[in-house]
Length: 184
Image 1 (cartoon, rainbow, N blue to C red):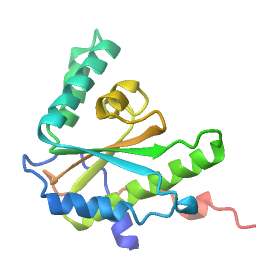
Image 2: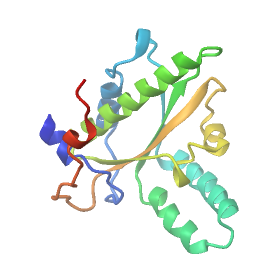
Image 3: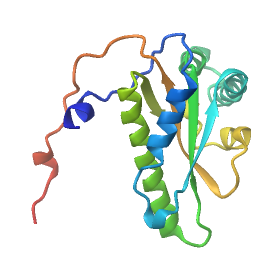
């Protein structure tokens, strides 16, 4: 398990190849085994491929053009994150009205679910990147509206998934837990 965690990488370049439905379902099933407070299972998954992904591209392009009107090169490079991705899964978390603590717990659970999906993606030979800012549109209402999420849902991540276009062989240097741990 430690080796799998050490090898995990954000993959941003994908082959032009569709993801088999069976693999998508395995990713989603892996997510459902994430720990979650009081078994609320606060996640919801919005799977985009084909036409729905083309619609997301339009939403993202409009957002980026409004945000960066004088930087067309930035818009174009940001859009590659979507246009060259065969599968996008938007993951939301349930908002518990009047209970900020439960809402936060749900966010933590959904983050765990996303990590479970990431590890499953690696096991299936897929690459993934978890986007929030920019084309991830997690902090904007445009994607929320496009996917039809309810007001009781908050977007936690936009997952871009595909078969990696290049092999990643090196491991990233990480700060040792020794420097980040206080033993009490």
